[in-house]
Length: 131
Image (cartoon, rainbow, N blue to C red; front, side):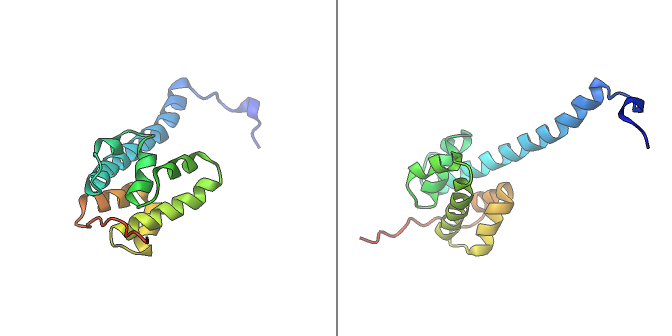
């Protein structure tokens, strides 16, 4: 077995390259998500620019799903956010006339399914008032 003292040191270039790949992938996913949010917000009759702003779009998503905007605050509370991601995804899928499969896609493959709803032929329907 090789001990830690016998291992060659990691060069700075290797370390930077190792850290840059996940960072760039995350940036690509965020950009794709924001573009999809822009189109979804526009379909919901909201200014599309709100979907492009990274923190603001978390407050736009519940509104697109027919929920109050203050639900966006709940995305910042650990563990509570897991429940609200599911609830908001279900409500967004429902507003676009889709089912549980789309909701699961929004939960697990968010950037892809946000773009499918935003750029696809799905029509947004406003929530029906129960009063």
